[in-house]
Picture 1 (cartoon, rainbow, N blue to C red):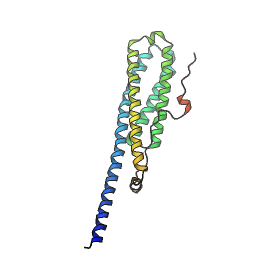
Picture 2: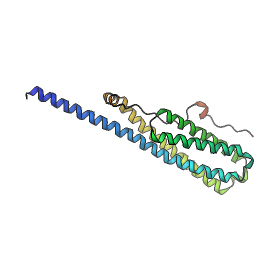
Picture 3: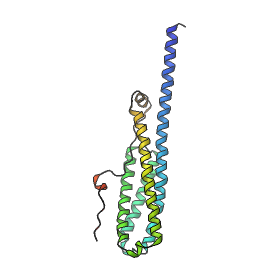
Picture 4: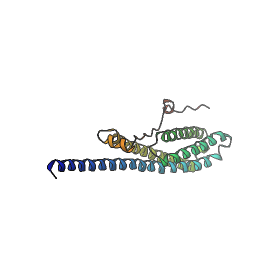
Length: 197
């Protein structure tokens, strides 16, 4: 073997090792997205588990506010179904959009529920309801932190998928950018809930 053959083989080996390293990095980053969503999933499950208890405590006071309670229950079921879909493919943009919409609907239903609670002093003073509300508030904070972590991990993955020269490896092996999880998708959702009695 002459020197030029050895140089070509050495360059080929180095390129191969770089491709393997880039591929493995992309796989690791994609797996971090799944792990980050698992953290969100844990908090969402906790939130979804608290809601029936909250509704049940309020039910005895709000018998004539049945529609509000049913909206909360229906929105919870929708959010749980959307969460189940995302769990199997956490960087699918369509599924994440469905989850965002379902969670926004649930947040809106809970906001209306809280507004109704405010109108009933005896319910507002219920110790069990206050305890559940506090637990729900803590869970909401944990969901927000988990969403931020998910978006940070997704950003790292997207940077790796889109930056040169890793984008060549990503294109060859079918790595596509992941979607961010937004807490709101429109200005209407960002506006405060208005309640009139």
